[in-house]
Amino acid sequence: MTERETPGGTEAADRVADVLLLLGRSDEPLGVSRIARELDLSKAVVHRILRSLASRSLIRPDPGGAGHVLGPAAAGLAIRAWSQLDVRAVASPVLRRLRDRTRETTTLSILVGDQRVYLDQFESPQEVKMVVEIGPRFPLHSGASSRVILAHLPQPFIDEAVRQLAQERPTFEIEPYLAGLARIREEGYGISLNERSTGAASIAAAFFDAAGNVLGSVSASGPIFRYSDESDEQQQEQVRLVVEAAREITDRLRPPADD
Image 1: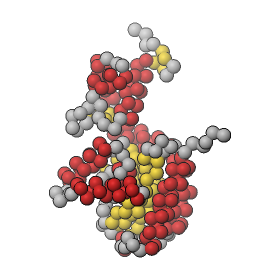
Image 2: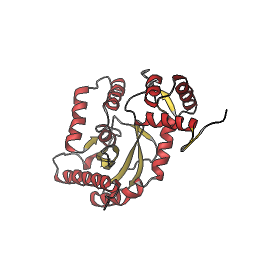
Image 3: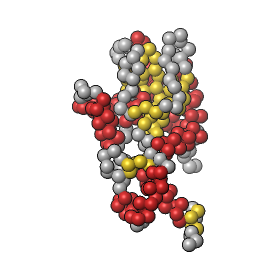
Image 4: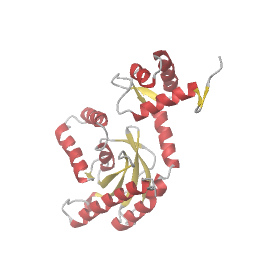
């Protein structure tokens, strides 16, 4: 049987792409029935597409059994795509200027699936400084650079972060954690002290696309002895500079207005 051609290539290729894009847009796992209904496909066709995508780790079953979500291979593609976009080039001068003004290491992180990845950094000129590793993935539940992203994501992401923390920390308290995320949304920044690394501190703020979707975060980080007092004027100035940098990156990522 000859495959019918479409403007996008072939009908089969279009269907696979549609399934991937639908999963990528969804804030929750999707089952076969819903995918079939959303895309007007038969369940048999959806089953075959999901089986093929899963065999290549582009999707994976949701641990809760509620359907499918994007898999590690899709996350790898996303990282590659981000590296080829202009985000790093757009953010680079902002990040460099933030480093020069704070004299601390500044970083650019991006959201990849349900994790965070450092995309770039400018190291502090000071002898005692923090340095991050570009590339590894980090959970969204801990660290200022992660939590400022999580605070602006749909509820399923927050629920999963809470579930992970409850499993990892027997003394974890949900209400203070959720209140902290609400405070980030209200104030526009987050601070972490000794959270992911002993002796490390960070101030972070999120940046967004033109539609208001969170894309990642920018941070200034250093040894904790330079971040010991939230009321300290120097620290508050760093907060202002980090928030200002995140806003500038957001503005630079917006498409130019039509004349």
